[in-house]
Length: 158
Image (cartoon, rainbow, N blue to C red; front, side):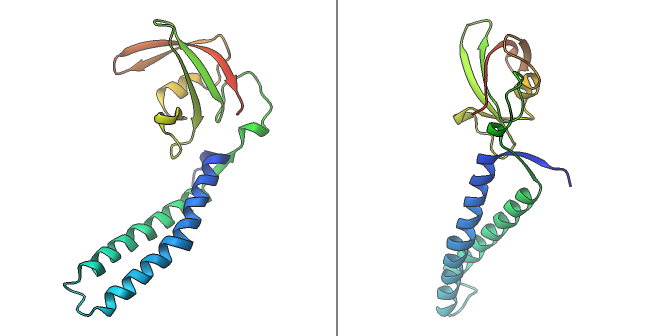
């Protein structure tokens, strides 16, 4: 199985979710199923059906997280000496050449990517173009609205 790149923060977040599902949600749903069973006829018991569906979701998510964590290659960018190049986990500030707007992105694994908090997947077009580049380099990225040119203005190991 191929290793999945993941930041140390991403791994911690997944472990917290995993622990919560196993120690809080799983016992809660087992209790809900027991209570629904105690009500009698299970064929027409909506609470029982809902609880079983929720149990399936929780167990599926537990297996998914276990799989991801077992295949994770955890990279703590703060422990890597800065090389002046963009690598997985770094936070990169870029300036759009056309309109001078500035954006900052952290390059993370697929599961951690969330554009709302400026975390982009290492497999995204922008991240692919950035990896290996240095401050001052200009990259071209093909977007749905056309090609944009970005200049790297800062690289941080946060």
